[in-house]
Length: 452
Ligand code: LLP
Image (cartoon, rainbow, N blue to C red):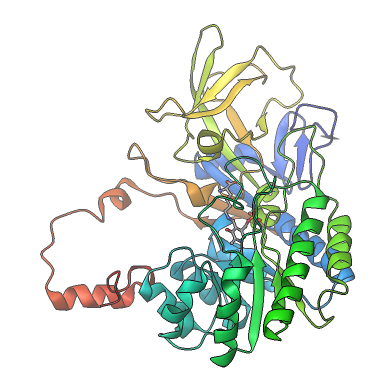
């Protein structure tokens, strides 16, 4: 019998593609208990169907309000090539933050014309890599332009504009105002002129004030800012942007009281603000990571031990080394006892990982069914910035990733082995020729910081 039991602990139904089969959580009809037994824990499990439907929903909402529209996937949310490939087949390009991400996107079949490289304090060889790869380049500071041009002419160019202090996004996920990101438009005007003179015809304007935003009004204000910036640019330089990139930031509900974003409202608000400010041929770009990935994935983890106390500690085999968000931002993730759905919650517990840090807490005072060693916990909304921010801290191999595709589970990243952990250490005395060979074969580790 199929019952819908809320993972968030309230009356809401399980979000598709999750469902309850009796007391067991399933994903596209597969039992997560069986997946954990087959692949081990901790384990990230992603639904490709959900990923594709997220991309389609987004494209549909925006394309209805503004054409031409371009959807770029922020690869930093999860860089698994199978994810990037699936999104490419849904028409997504890629927003990349490093040469290695550009390389992943290219190998996944994303054409360079659909890749944007957003550099943040780039090394010389990284700028050169992007120019050679033929991607669009988004610069964080106009003062970087001469350095970029010294490597050739990028296919397209934008500057990341900082709109000044805003209330965008939860603390820790705010990138506007006093932050290392972006520049004032007034500082970039001369650089736009130089770019035009250098023969770059595709010029754009970019901004990214914050992440995980659930208020449609925010995106209207982003569009208003971009629209105004486009008018200032036209007045000052005579140039019209050929694309406006509103960054990422589309939020998803992590807590039961939060409501999903009304994408149609977001897209309509954005289009209304752009109307009249830019030409109808101006492309609208957005580059979400979280919205595409977050709710596609659960992190499966097994209870290792329960320590009694005023608030008991339930230890699990995932921790801040597997999912850093709770330790880094105090982020909240929904959790479900994966084989005890429908059971009444017992007294609150702290869910903690195995790492020797006090911040290694996945949930504080969480009401879950009574959990004992061996029980399986599923952590929801783990697809964005989950695996991609994992580490080997405390010398723990990184987990595996499984993709559920057409009802079948495929392993798309094998679990690291102990051998993997020490395969990069040793004592080498490389000759200069060995060193330069290594540099040439590794796009992320090119030459030296000065490109020498
Ligand atoms: N574009 C740029 C230039 C970005 O820096 C980011 C994210 C995105 C797009 C995608 O943003 P999204 O749609 O995911 O909000 N680690 C944090 C999120 C940091 C986002 C950094 N930049 C987290 O776990 O919540």
